[in-house]
Amino acid sequence: MSVRRLAEDQFQPAAFAFNDENAVWADKTIQKYPVGRQQSAVIPLLMRAQEQDGWVTRAAIEKIANMLDMAYIRVLEVATFYTQFQLGPVGTRAHIQVCGTTPCMLRGSEGLMSVCKSKIHHHPFERNAEGTLSWEEVECLGACVNAPMVMIGKDTYEDLTPERLSEIIDTFDAGNGASITPGPQIDRHFSSPEGGPTSLTSEDPKAKKSSAKKVETEAATAKVDAAPVPPSEAARPKSTDAETNAALKTPVTAPKAAAKNAKAVEEQPGVAAPVPATAKPSLEDKNRPAGIEKPATPDDLKLISGVGPKIEGTLHELGIFTFAQVAGWKKAEREWVDGYLNFKGRIDRDDWVKQAKALAKGGEAEYIKVFGKKPR
Ligand code: FES
Image (cartoon, rainbow, N blue to C red):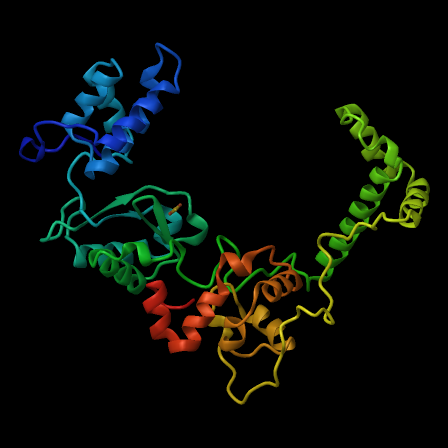
């Protein structure tokens, strides 16, 4: 680790004070700790001071030491130990932390640093001419699976190429950093494989078998839990843990009795048989989005983040070939497709409809305008 020192005197302001909002927050934070243990708030207070002024000044260190009744040297030790704290002024719009540890290095972090050197400054921690940008090399930031990556503020930007980092830097420099979606910058969902899941999908025969078994077990358990409780006893107090555990064991040790009880429940008037939560929706369901004949030139649905070749194939089987179709999906239709793909809410999380609307309206150019990045 390099030696970390406070910035030169010429950069140090004469005083530091939390603004009104942060002062209230700091008081509340200090009160979270028992009397005599207020110094435990030193890291959150230093971080808030950095968020307020962009870096940790000597005056901030002294102010926080006074607030927590600590010696200046103790707060200085903390600030100089953790590399999250910037000890000198950094870019006012972005300070780019490029991970240079082995996985990122093997996947191209040197190319990312070259971009920083050419666009910002040849040396780390030096700001560009306007003072808006700076960069540094850091150790592993814990997103190695999507290497190479950088961190800007509290967000990480992963699966980077030099070209994509260059675009990100330009966007931050233009003051539009908030328009960029953090995380993977390619067709990857969190740390899933590129292009979508390749295992434990609904099409995976092994997953299907184990999922079907799970559904059967859950259904039997639910039925058995419900079966022995007559309506008149429904208001009983909750079972103890021991009772609950014993009940949960019942279907495993007595499958025949479980089936009998389940049948009895099904036959009770007004008692609905439990529907397995993971059941795939029927192709005949009224909420299935309308399909069309394959057009001569179908849209490249893989431009929608979250759609890989396999998912695109499934959508084609459903008659979904265009962005306009996806853009028009209502909630019930999205839920149907989500359930059919066993996506557990991913369609809404990735906002396929917004992506599809942009692509349908103006292709990649409109997508970049809306999302601040290229599709996929
Ligand atoms: S090596 Fe770069 S994030 Fe871990």
